Length: 199
Image (cartoon, rainbow, N blue to C red; front, side):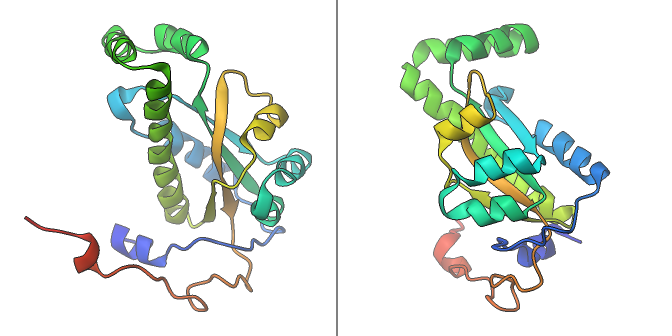
């Protein structure tokens, strides 16, 4: 399927079929896709937590506001977290990135306030979300992006150290009676002329 047809077909699932599991190889492929996500100066300030354990998902669902049902129903929940403890992240930069990349990051860090640096790092995570949503569709999966989570409680439940959850993505197969299916709720977007300008 070409990319345009894929995006035309993709929609945000609101209800999932909890009895339909995702093949292990598909999940492993999605892990590798997210690992390969691009980021500014290739800084990769993230952690992706793949949650399939029903008990952990239930705990996360309880702190997912209006997204609780989706978290419980979907066979997979991916939590997107950004480096939040800059000292901890500095160790990752020093130990895992090549010298040129490390030097570039350190120059940027020196030129920004801590709050500016954290905002810049957080913006990178949205690139990964876009990759995750599109890749899920390409793998024949349905997905839902969810900013509606209680970040601190997610971090506690997942025992995340140095990283802060920003949002999550439910992944699975939409229920047959999902009220947001395209046949029921056609995709609605602004007209091309309103959002695209050619100069």
